[in-house]
Length: 153
Image (tube, rainbow, N blue to C red; front, side):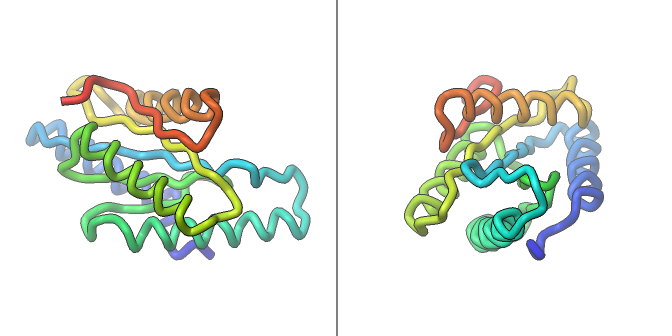
């Protein structure tokens, strides 16, 4: 439905970037994207509408990132963007660009973003945990925000 990679494939790309980062000391970042104001607990017509919104959102993101970046479905309500050769500052710019596009396209939802950039001590779980914490902080600050962990260059 979303025309982006499924979680399994997104995790494969993430692991490949972790391997490259470890071996070649390259930068990369991830962005977790969570639409807000669209959560329905039951499988109802509203839930189907939420899936269509997520598909539209994924399409908008895909059209506005680099060809080397990867967008994948992370779970029922989240997307992940893997940005090779991207530091924290660049990832924040990319997330802000997407956030502003969502606002200008009058989507029926807002989105919060959680960003983490690779650090030498990271494994997949630690990187995702930091992005998840940044996302939670963005949501706790009222939603529709970009949160990140780490120090800006």
